[in-house]
Structure formats: C-alpha cells, structure tokens
Image (cartoon, rainbow, N blue to C red):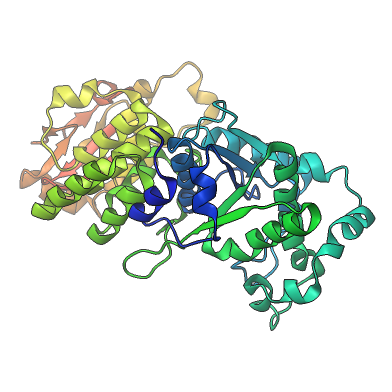
Length: 439
C-alpha cells in the first residue's frame, strides 16, 4: 500500500506550505513531481539534500520523481535568497556539471524506475527565441505580479538586472513544458522558491487552463541558528573530490543532539517507529552519540558506498580506541589516506633530507629514509619544537613510533619502519599523534 506523502512530510518536518487541492491530487494516484537543481557547480552539497530527500520520499510513497537540472536557467541565475547577481556559466561548464550532478542524484533516487528521470531545461529552451518567449509566455504574466514576489522585492534597493528579474518566467515555463510533455502536476522546493513555483502554476492555468500544485519545505537551520550545510571549511559537498567521505561522515557525526533528532527524520528513509525508537534510545544515553553515529553511517554509505563508510568509521575510532602494532600494519592504503585527514598534525616530508630529483632514479622510499635518528625526525618534522624537547620526551618514555616505544634518542629509523612503504605514525603520550608521509 502506497504511503501518504503529505503525512510522511509532516512527521519528518519537511512540509512548509502546499497549494489547496494537492492532497486530493496525491490521493488520486501516482503523481509526477519535480524539483530543479542549479548546475553552477560540478557538485551538489548537503544543503541540497533536503530537496533530494523530498524526491526520495516522493518515490517511496509510490509517486514519480523528476529531477530537473537547470542547464538553461543556470545561464541566468536565480535571484532568490541572493544579495547580488551571480556569475553566469558557459554551456560547456554547465554540461559537465549536469553529468556530475546526475551521478550524485542517482545515489538517492532511482532515475530508471517507473518513469522517474532527470531532465535538462536547456533541451527545450535552446530552440526558443527571445521574441517567441516574450510573445508566447511573457504576455500572460503582468509586471505587477512579478514585482510582488519576495525574490524581486528583496532586491529592489540594491538593484536587480532584467536577467534575474525574468528568472521566475523562465522557471515558470519549465513547469509549463513538463506539464505538457510529461504530465507533471507538482513542483517542490524550499520555501524561498514559493514565488517561482507559483508563477509556474499560474502560467499553466493561464496558458493551458490546466491545474498544477506546489509543495515547499522549510529552510533548514541548525539549532544554534547557523546555516545548515556549512562546516569550518565551507560547503560540505557530495562529490568526494571536494569533500572526502571522512569529512562528510564527520559533518553528521558532529551534529548537536537537537539537530541530530531533526536530521534523522529528514535525511533517512527509516520508518517513523524506528526513528522515534532511536531518538528515545539516544535520550537515555546521549553521551554515546548513537544517533549521530547511525545517521553519519547511513548517509555516508548511501552516498559513497560500503568501503568508504568502513574506512571513515575506522579512522574516526582510531584515535580513541586501543590498537595493536599488528593491526596498524594490517590496515589497507585507503585507511592511511583517510588518516591523513583525521590527524591534525599531518605532514608530507622528505626524509632524511631533500634529494636532487636526478639522484632518485630507481630509489625506493625505503632507501631514501636510510637511517635517521628518531630525535632528528621528531624535531625536523615539527612534531616537537626542538631537539632538546625531543630528547626530554624520549627520556621520559612518552614517544612511540608506529606504536612501539622509543627508548634511545640515537635510535635510528630505517625503511623497514615505514608502513605501506610510506607512513610513520608518531605519538607522544596517549592522545598526541603526528603522521609523517615519506616522499
């Protein structure tokens, strides 16, 4: 039995506003609903996940999701929520970005099932001339109607170009085209898109005498009022080249308790009873952060796959759980790549000294390492501030290399000490780590 889509949105906290009659439309049978995504970058970010989950839940409830990539509207730029005009994109960049975004959407939505698909509005706009557009579309919407939209009113003092002013007509015509060609009767988006979406429903009514509907979700902020989707390093992207699986995992793992309770409703496909049980369990022992861990694991697995989530978890736990020297040496290369991000004191160094490139022909990293006194390595890498501090630390017995305690300051490290023919893990005490990658 198909789920009630509006009920699903309500209990998940995903319903902000809907046009009258949408409940009857959804109850009558499978409905095609679409959301547009901006292709001005080659990756979506976690802020887009709210809209991706709207389509995900729509499909789970027996309806048909249509994802629209704005290859044409990306050349114009949506003024909604913007204080200044955005830099416009060229066609080649938008084509590349569209291909990347499709792959990311496919991790959450089955774009090959039951009519679900991804469309690009450049496919229909490329054949429409300017005069045709203002004659066939522009005449149906008054300037007064367009001026009343918040996306326009909020820019009147700072100025808005005709390009951005016309954006709502361009997006509105997307809805008209999809209504005519695919029978799409629902458009969804964030609450800041209400004006653009209802321009589309109005165009469908005036141009074709048809009926169409809108649903919007609340704009998501964190419990402390800060913008969702940002970390200290900026946007958290869905592309692993921009945001690694480890950083993506950490973003969800570090969510505040109040945020985690909302996030598991919005960003998972778990059933309501399961979500409520997990929240109740978390409330009994919040210090264990089980809600954050399960959320981070679920989303990282869905986006990046099983291997990546396994290494993200292993690297995250590495600094806080005991391990043996044998375990350390058994970890695969992927783990060490992830550990580079996990340990704050990570350095790539040439050991023992820079060597002229011509002298390295046929020489392995093990041979380059040669034999270097550990006291020299500790100081030269910057792990410890000086040779004297390194000597004191060794004397007090607090230094380990790859989990093995150093007892003599003149002890030499050789190529046999490199893990994966590349790494040395330096440690002072139990919690102070430093990773050296030999080049």
